[in-house]
Image 1: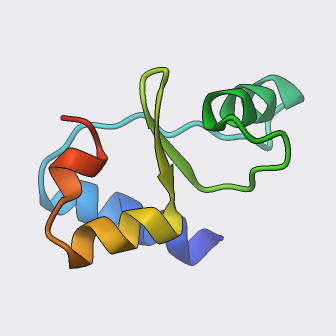
Image 2: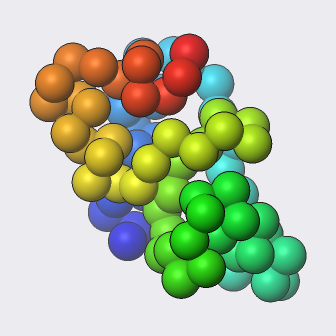
Length: 76
């Protein structure tokens, strides 16, 4: 999980894409919100959303990078 998060942050930083980190270990509200936005009550971090719009999980993020479709994936 940690390596995935680090890669996400590294890629977003390198492309100068602003983002907000949400720590789901600090109370259950953030975890519940992540799972609600993902539409999956058992979703595990990292999950990526653009506001309330769900983008995907880490595997989908990596696929978007490979396919050179990161901006579409992030719904920018």
